[in-house]
Image (tube, rainbow, N blue to C red; front, side, top):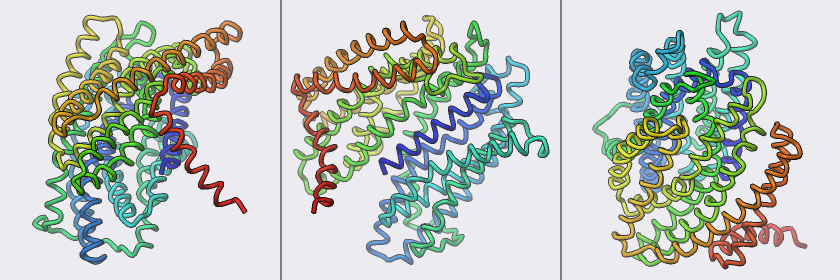
Length: 528
């Protein structure tokens, strides 16, 4: 699953590189970004959140205690409900596309043709919402049957499909089909979403499931899933509302070089870099933590629960604190090496790197927040994270509005507001959890985090020096950036490792064992 997450992130990055090279920070790409973001809300609301957390446990229980036939009936009821509810939402989204664009990107109306293009692309891509919900259900069914590889690769299939179909429709068949290039890429998103769903169907059939349309909203299992989804949807929706609020603010920012075109795209590209460490560290560690702390709660071992949560948070900090420093120091080199070229010029690189640095301030809190939230779910409390997440809407709006009106940060201030929300959510939930369970080894965490921070600063200083020397010798072009990353990243990792080892950070041993354990087991298997 970790390899599949990395594959998804890499192919997603390739897709973003291609779009950046083809369209740059242009009106077309800004309109495409908003049109994709509106239906993509359900990726968090359903594919990675509410639907999975509500459907998978009950479906697994049905498989275990009632048999495959009853589980298949439950899955059929859920599929039918998705088709009805999400299908209706898609129809409403297509019909209300003008109002949605005006609500979430009012500044687009200031650029001739931009609002109309965003409306058209939104209407094209809204069916993606239904497809990703169906793909999420298929993923849950396969996971419940201990099938992880195929569903984990579904996102990779989406990335590959959206690019392939988009290029075919926009650049090869576009003139014959009377499609512009950006319209072809929008249709590619829809077809990529279909591929993400279709990719899993053969595996579902091999498990012996034959889903049929079945409607019964009075069914106890379906009603239980709907009740469980409520708080999770509201909590995830708050995160998406913050994203859309910031998009609305960004759409009205007049950049001195790009005008009203650019800030939305710069923020989107910068956050892509954040998703890689978040997926590999935050999501992976949180997913591994949940079963362990759930067993602790079930057995009544609260001490083991506290220890596991504390170790997981410490492990997240060990991986994300140096990552955040690295993104701040090497941000421009990373962006230039990956994106710069074609219509994406050095100015876009600088502005994207600035937003990335502001996002990076909240990386550790954002990743650790996933562990703390899972702790509340293990305690069968989904309401507390929901309330804190809803409160974050006001925090985000206040910081974003203040950054735009009282500072010269521009779009970077919006990235900073996202970091402020992550720090707020983690701090409040950590404090609430500590009070609820009688402590989470706070002094130990504070001591370890302080030593990690010192090591990360030492790493940052060394990397900054090396990067500056390379830029003086070779400039700041794409090849120089690649050279800088090839030298600075290994050097930075080495400095961080030796400093944390010197400072005796306990989480370092845990990380070393986690990496060395599989290698030792592999060696034992191949040893004659």
